[in-house]
Length: 62
Image (cartoon, rainbow, N blue to C red; front, side, top):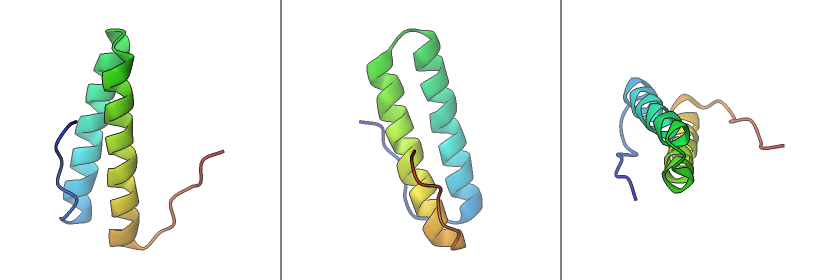
């Protein structure tokens, strides 16, 4: 499981989410769906933490 820091300010969380998103896209391009899913789960967790930091509701999944 990838490591990430859920504490920090919004800028840090955005940078972390972007890095994990890019890693997910690379994994998807390489056909590594397990890593893609792990990275996207991490992105979701970081975005949820970002929502707490900035106080804006995250969009709900369809």
